[in-house]
Every structure is written in structure tokens, then in C-alpha cells.
Length: 163
Image: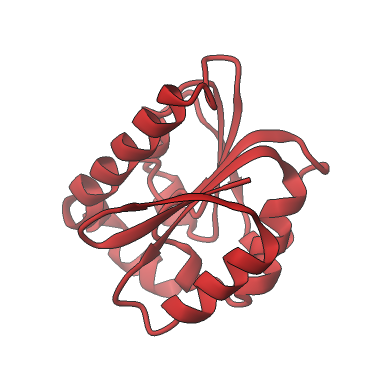
């Protein structure tokens, strides 16, 4: 994660508004369908600076491989330095698992998605960068590992709501 460690100081300036925009779409959808509330346990995989994590209700945990990004997260979010492919949580621990524009950065996408599936219990929301060369492969894996409830359109990402 040397790239994100090197650009951590400017992360929110570069990506903050985009991340908040996507998070608001996701939060609105989850609330509208009663899939999240203040008692939900939420995991954000690839949370970065938690610029989007903080917009969600509930007990929030963020995991990211960049220590420099994690240093910028606000108080009130449990932080874990780690990777999607090896999530240090019990099976079915989280009600909601999200990953906003991070999956294309996983070293092993299928293993990371499988780990997210393992630790979640209710709903998963994974956004995939439309211009990623891995988009078609990631979409295939999402459809293989999860039941797709819907795909929300965003200007930069496809937002997969999964069960």
C-alpha cells in the first residue's frame, strides 16, 4: 500500500467528495429498505481515511492496509490495519459489510470477497470502479459469491447491493 501511504496527506482532497457522494447513496438505500440502523455492526473494507465510513449509522469498524490513511480516521470508528484477504473477525460478525471503490485494489479479489462474505450476515454493498480493467471479472465474482439484490448507478462506480 505504498501508493496510498505516499498520497495519504491529500487523499480526502483528491477523493473525499466522491467517496461521500457514494456513501450517501448507499446509506439512503440501506435506510430506505430498513437494512441498517444505529444498532447495526458495520465493517468498511478498504476504509481509507473513513471519510465515507463516518456517514453510516451503527457500530463502525474500518480495515485498511494503509497505516497513513488510517491515521486520518475520526474518533468513534474501530480501526484495524489489515487486508481484505485476511479479515480478523469471526464468521457472520457484521450486519453490514461495505467496500467503496476498493475491491479493484485487492491482491486477490476472490479471496477478499470470500472473506467479506464470511464475516457478514445481512447485506453487503460493494462499489466497483466502472473504468477498472478488472470490472467484468469482479462483477462475475460478485454474481458467483452473492445474490445481487440491485445495482445502483453512480457516475464513476456500479454499486452492487448484495445478499
